[in-house]
Amino acid sequence: SGLSPEEEARLKAKNWSEAKKKAYRDLTGQLDRNLYKAESSLGARKDAKDANSPDAKEKCKELFGASPPVTDALEKLGADEDLKNEAFPPNGARLPRIKKLLTADSSFDEEPKDWCMRQLIVKDPVNAGTPENVDVAEKLTDAYLAAAGSGLSPEEEARLKAKNWSEAKKKAYRDLT
Image 1 (cartoon, rainbow, N blue to C red):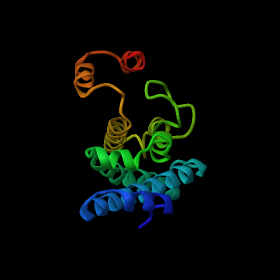
Image 2: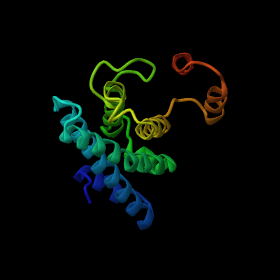
Image 3: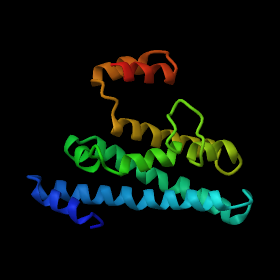
Image 4: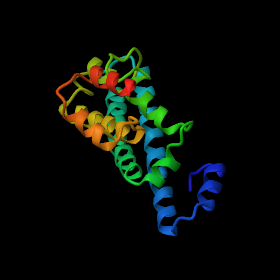
């Protein structure tokens, strides 16, 4: 199934329907396979010396092609509290890997300091910075933030989203509350 033995044992112990367990296996498999593909493509693209080489263009295409299935799985796992809690435990690796792919561990309101999707869009506007790829990165960011959670209630988060504040100010608000 692609799950670690520990994750498979936890899943077997859950009092979930077989359909829910299957959905969990399918969605985490989709997420893990495509996240690995995106990470590998980003690494290979970073190693390419010439941004316009066929290999660099192909790796860029693979990176942005692997990201929508990650977004889809994130959204579906995040929509069910049980699935979300199991797929993204506090010390789990999935959410940190997605953040690293997006931001190289920078905060979302600062310029990335290392190689990641956001930096690639800026450094390679011809191949990576297309409107379609920017949209892919924004959707993945939104799904990541929804799955990671802010610690605010849905009502507070909705009020905050409606405010015409910078992302930095919104982050400061979340950090303070």
